[in-house]
Length: 343
Image (tube, rainbow, N blue to C red):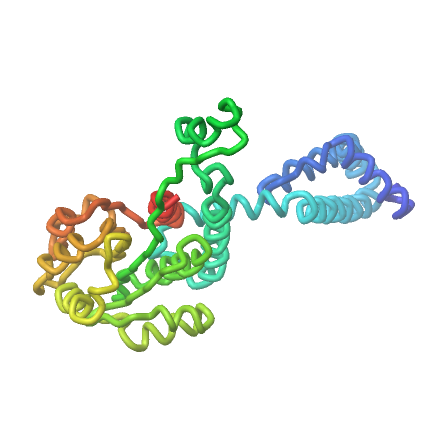
């Protein structure tokens, strides 16, 4: 077929060999060489190689021509495998890429991966919304109150025409998020703010604040702008500076402490590095006393907490939950645990 250059016959032979090699099972780009080899084996590449060795000694010109045609055949097989990978491996390749991203340190995401990570964060937000925004009917109405049901139906011989339900009171969930956007943690805060403000269907009352040297509210900025524009505005106002937790906590206490109620979960995302300034731990204590819970998410590894200018051990004494939160997977678990307490 090669010598006659019968392209139709060669294409048909590649298709037949692809079926015999189970090419539809290809999922990852690393499998391209394996499946190319299988298809060529099915087509008889070993016999062709043997013929080439013989022809090299007896008919060098023909051997050279056949060798060139064999190189073309290999290229055609590689093209067929690449097309199959696009067709059958796209979902698995995306899942693999997402799994790698989920476990990658957020602070070290490369610029080319930022939009991929944002898409992954949006997927996480959708997953959390689906999980927590649709409580079961039984959860909404509560559990059957047997005693009240019997009393209501005494006139009908206790046949339960009328039912009574025990309803469990649920606090209206509120989240106040304080995000360090200094240079060391700005990238993590970017993804954190995106996730928090994607959860309005689950937690309708969310207020977000950003700080480096001082603190501002950024709720309206995040809600009325694209992610890129919102982060540009936030960073231009308070981003990339040296973190001053004491001053930032004082700003929050002076202007917004009334937003913290017994129904509020306060989340602080930051590395707790105060640059040897007043950490404002007494203010954090007062915030904790007003809130339902105080959660601290730290993107640094636990081994670094308490060393250098890290005030994490001091802050931790006033927190209900302290979690390392350096990856998208850790961020998803932390936010899921927080939202779950309101269901």
